[in-house]
Amino acid sequence: MTANFSTTQTTLIDEESWGTSRYLSDKFQVFISLAGFPDSKGDTQLSYCLTLADLNFNEIMQKPFPELGQALEAINSTYGEWKLSKVEAPKSGDGCSSCAAH
Image (cartoon, rainbow, N blue to C red; front, side):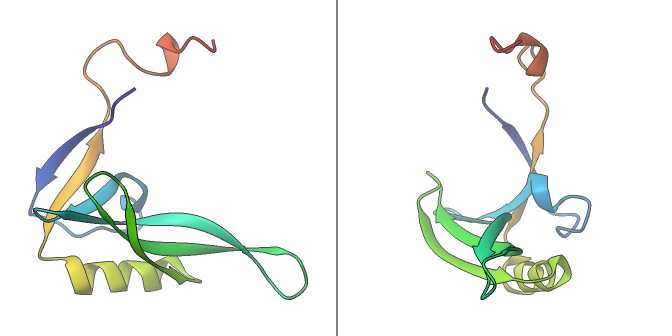
């Protein structure tokens, strides 16, 4: 299934849209992803990672933040002037109900 992205300049990435939004330039994209890292006790700690990648999703840089608010502040203050792109649900019949696994 291919994600459809729409572009807009009207808002910043926030707590509700961070998982479905990214900022775009001519050659790069930046988004927040969720990652797990082992801590000193052997437990997994979740981090919100600001990820800079090329348009083919080849990672260039990743910076983890322990809190979503910190990652949002970093992405919006550094890349907020780039074009905002949000994932939209496919308009065709593609989707979970058409998956061969069901």
